[in-house]
Image (cartoon, rainbow, N blue to C red):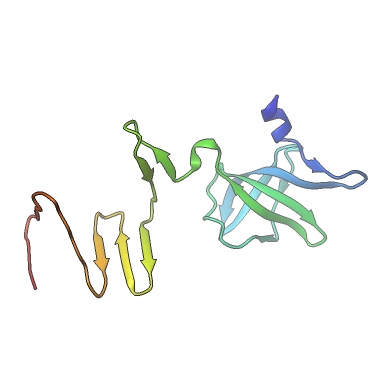
Length: 142
């Protein structure tokens, strides 16, 4: 029942559909073709909100019809699409396919998909109450 309600257009009294769910069917030259879930109609959006992840075929988006045409207002990821997950041991896990960077002022930690971790700062302190181990195929100091 909830899924059925989620696929219907959101309507305001006395107005046409304000927003609808659509599925990305194809993407040519960065412009996706969308299939509206209510009617199956194929549409091409004229605009999208900023900061959307690159759309993939099969993605679900929320679209709104404006005077200029269809506008993508949100990209839906589903329940399990959060980059934050808990492992079986209860630890919090953050997953990013393209990399991760933490930055505060001039200090940063960057992690790349290739396995490179860069810690950059004016001073870097490591503390251990027990053994502190540095391991690597090659360890270079200065």
